[in-house]
Length: 206
Length: 206
Figure (tube, rainbow over the protein chains, first blue to last red):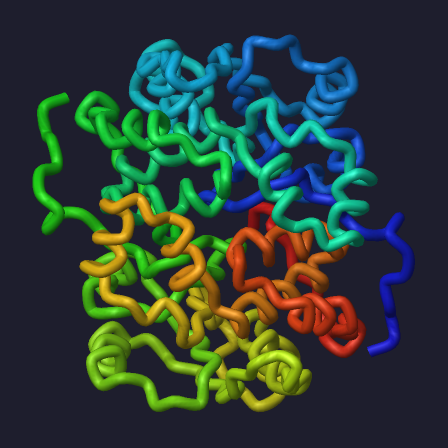
């Protein structure tokens, strides 16, 4: 009982809004170089990136040197009421998470886990976020930093595949969305047809 | 692609605020009988209950019939500024989560995973919570239902053991606490001495 961790340089900085979704499946805000040493502890095999913008060079380098495969699905951002969440693309992203027969058929390695799902939000540096914490402006912090809409939709659809009731799907969505929650996202999840993604998936111990 | 899940009776209802903390470690609000079929999918070996109140009979029955072991740590609730979070009890709870040499020494089975950590909050029936969702009174919902302080402290200390930086520990705490966040809880986590719990623990794939 004598080894004490001293100094922030020895500590891990998970990306903002980091959470474990299920065995081998994680979600987070956009990862920055400060988060790389933490991400290495996850032994990621793949990352699902849900934005059309090119992946930054530093992140691409990190992926290369850690043999992490990038699956990019360019879902455009939107502002309500101009809603156009592409059902097919969400389905494709889910296929990567689940490893469906689609991938078996084309001979790819379907063992994409551990996988991290993220999109573009949370692009505020750690120093700013720490400063917000220090000044206890939590409410502001929640509004500015806390949500990734596309990630929230993918995870919500995954929960439907896991047969979570809709109020629980929304409970989780709300927790990450906070003041940025959108009715259109929730409507999308409500209408998402689970029968079109044939594989079931559960939190149970594997 | 033709099996569609119809009707809520076929869906799982996770306890409020349910989340996966790490491999084999879950957190949630107080589980009710409506949540039991979901909990069965987790194949729990143990539950850590952080309140002094007796465990309800229905829950005890559920534990018995599913061979789930109950670890109860009677941490009293408090209202600021009367703060007395018992450091030792939090440490004992962490020992159950981690399976420390303490347990090896006394010959107990330390394989407590999968384990669910919960305390008393969230004691509002599913019908009420659904009604709140229907009426879109999300803010009220968050305030009334969303937090378990003692669970938040245990998970926060666990994150410190995982060497998460403090701002990330608070980020997660805040997400579950929403409007119910307490400075005293965060101060407790900040001061918690990780060197007194010797085992490290990580999100990495096992």
